[in-house]
Image (cartoon, rainbow, N blue to C red; front, side, top):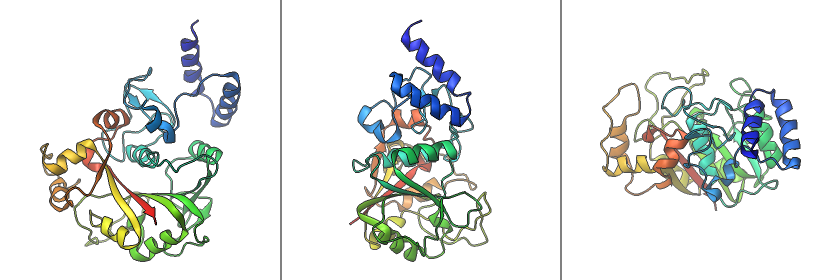
Length: 305
């Protein structure tokens, strides 16, 4: 049997094994010279493999390396679920954006991730390659290694190199205090990759009590002006978007019909600062990774100077 078919068969069988056994098999496979299923998320930009048709199909996960015909669920920032690692579209976009950073180096990078959605396999991978810790505010919605209130972070100054904080800041009452604390604990030239559910163009407080799926209260619905708040806090900041989102913002493509229960695309277009965003993924990459519809995907890259 050709080597290519052997490797493909091993990967198929491996997906059926318990996580602990998979880790042991991977260790043996590395020593035997069997390639891993795919490059890790921090190498994707160097290899250019995302967007190419993989052997398993046109869709691709940059977190676990799965490729296949389709993601589970629908095209939505909280869906397009990887059938192997359960990452959503926004999980993959967060790490794609972080992988653009040439300063991310194995072993030495001190990584903190607030309230990560993904479970034991993902965290084991991160701990294997980085000095990684996960945190949560009250250890109820998500399990973390440490408890952290972003308004009062009990960590030393300059103790973090990379902060991943997806869909957390909207649950913090005092934004300015939280950003000041994050600036304090990040090392010089350290980076934060921040996501919030940006459904409208300008920041506002909910007019009535609002909760997300884990029953966590929402204090702020952020818009494009979050960029200014981050710069005021001392960060060099840019918003990373897909090429499809950029075309919507410049009027090159027509916006979707209004939906009062979803993203207000017209308001996002109305309030966007002209040119104050950066394209981080082209159309092929966005399609392969499940970053559709494009207006639902934005990540703030914040460098501590």
